[in-house]
Image (cartoon, rainbow, N blue to C red; front, side, top):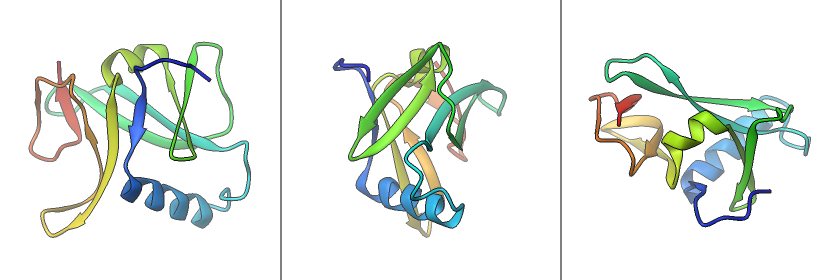
Amino acid sequence: MVDTENSIYISDKAKDKVSKLMEDAGVGNDPSYFLRVGVVGGGCSGLSYKLDFDNEVKPMDLVFEDKGVKIVTDLKSFLYLVNTELDFSDGLNGKGFYFDNPNASRSCGCGESFSV
């Protein structure tokens, strides 16, 4: 685990949704699985977020834990995700995961891409 003030966080609502999705995927009771977050090139603002379940930590990965959820990202993505919170909305204005990223200078209307 990385012990630092800079981290990646998850809201209670996102934690509940991640837990449910992991159960639905059949990996909810397997402690080797975690939430992998990342940043990839693309999207209408230049960079897009990526979420997935994984069970293999790579040599250049950083590992965090918030509210009992293990969150892993690669070092390059972390430079864009420092102090970002993963949240979940089920409201009328959009349903799904979104990132509250203090490093983004602007984001697109759909909230799936951003620029710094």
